[in-house]
Image (cartoon, rainbow, N blue to C red; front, side):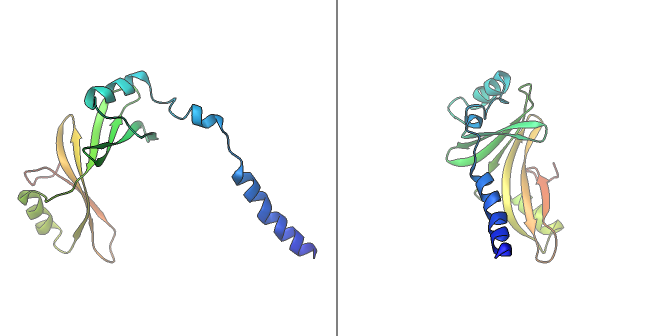
Length: 146
């Protein structure tokens, strides 16, 4: 009986702690979004509101929808735009497809993002092949590596 009660107690304590919440977090969840970052986002996307802000590595990331397509814009904490990644739906340019089929003939395209940066744009392509790790390749529209 003691073992049963002890086991029950071990299960109940984590559940009790997991159900506690710190309600004041909701009021402060976007404190890391500086005015400079907010302004930089609004300058790039004046008609869009992010649905979520996150810290990702050294960057502040805004998640939003642009023309009903998911996108993520990355900024330095000082408000410098680094890049925007947009889910790509469509057909890759012939030069990109040719590059991928030549260099990675046994791989299939799993996911594609269109990445815009101050220094140029490219496709970030995730390739997969059964039994091997996934490969990510950054390819410009002309079929050269980014």
